Amino acid sequence: MDSLVLDLFAIEAVKFGDFKLKSGIQSPIYFDLRVLVSHPRVLERVSEQLWLAAEKGGASFATVCGVPYTALPMATLVSVRHGVPMVMKRREAKDHGTKKLIEGSIIEESACLVIEDVVTSGGSVLETAQALTEAKLVVKDAVVFLDREQGGRERLFEKGIKLHSVLTVSHVLATLERLGKIDSMTSAQVREFIRANTFSPVAAPKVLSYEERVPLVENSLTKRLLRVMIEKRTNLVFSADLKSKEKLIEVIDSIGPYVCMVKTHIDIIENVTSEFVTCLTQLATKHNFLLFEDRKFCDIGNTVEYQYGHGTFEISQWADVINAHALPGPGIVEGLKKVGQLRGRGCLLIAEMSSKGNLISSAYTQETVAMAMAYRDFVIGFIAMRKLTDDPNFLHFTPGVHLASGGDTLGQQYLTPEEVIKNRRSDLIIVGRGIYEATDPVEAAKLYRKEAYKAYEESLK
Ligand code: 5BU
Image (cartoon, rainbow, N blue to C red; front, side, top):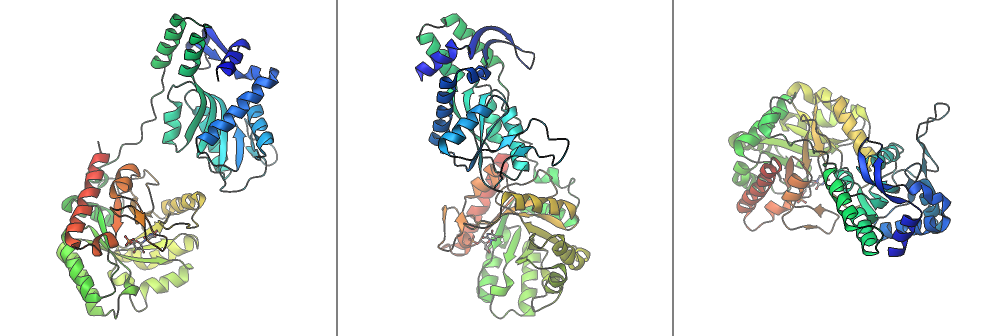
């Protein structure tokens, strides 16, 4: 790497002095990698290092895209040398014809590696990543030749992009000082400049407490649930997936004090009777929790209207909350809303799933969120693996939660309560086997409640 740093210095791709940056700030160091096009051998080495850095960082991608203009030749070399297709971002959308911002053949939902010459705040990488995302590509990794260490890496990380770099300013300074190209004064000056001009990470929106959310939410059912969560100090939903009615009633009665909601799969319970359903609703009143039937409706509006309002289980008569796939389109919400809204019920849209290999793509998730926004009077939130929107009206419920990570033999994948609530900023955890298969389900429910509530309180700090 020493010889590459020396070459950059020799061709004046890195210069020391007093330079006015785009932002207007005076800088004692300047990187100008545009000169590389006049030095093909150096350009070739820079490009190869970019490839190696991405590879070393574990980036996986199907296409590459250089941030215009300086990184375009670098991306081209990477593409040609390694046989990875490239897409190209325009600086401006064409004002005639297709208005496309990204040129090239796009394989929707495939990963694209963003290539950049220098990263300061990460703004240009983000701009390119946004255009790529709009063109239905997925950006998880970016590789930069030189990281100015001024906060870009952190900012990109917050947006879900991992930055891999070939060189950092510190490394360049140390190398040039060691090889006698700059003195220690210059090096110290630059270090101080970098320290004083670091972009702070974009503050993640503050997590609102349940109390703060109550007056902000429009739906009265959401308000009710939040109040239960506050009063009982619990964001735990029990997934009561037991087949025996007696066992189910027994478990629900014993863990009722620790949950804000009980989720059922009514069609797995043997010989369901109206007395059983009455018993369920009585328990909900006794322990002050809501009932959620995990029916996962997924049909045209007309059919779901019948399924929800009629049939053996008469779901709309007793379930406060139901859920639905967004797959059939808005008609499904219209159909369910026709039955549920007058009764004050609410619906969760399944925006993501916990099971391995599920076919939900990020574009599908985004469309689901958009659909929820359009039906906010009836859709109260999502089944999702993380927080999807900062809109306080929507509650995020995450299944696939277990204190022991791992999964089952049929594709379930588990996350811990802390990961779900604190790191992924979801609102509620859904736990089934972690509780009802435990030697002592009551103790297990208490533990899940404690862990998830603690994670929520910590996320407020
Ligand atoms: P478990 O025993 O905690 O693994 O049960 C999880 C429950 O959540 C179970 O009733 C599933 O039907 C439900 N579930 C899920 O696990 N993953 C999903 O993506 C969705 C629902 Br949607």
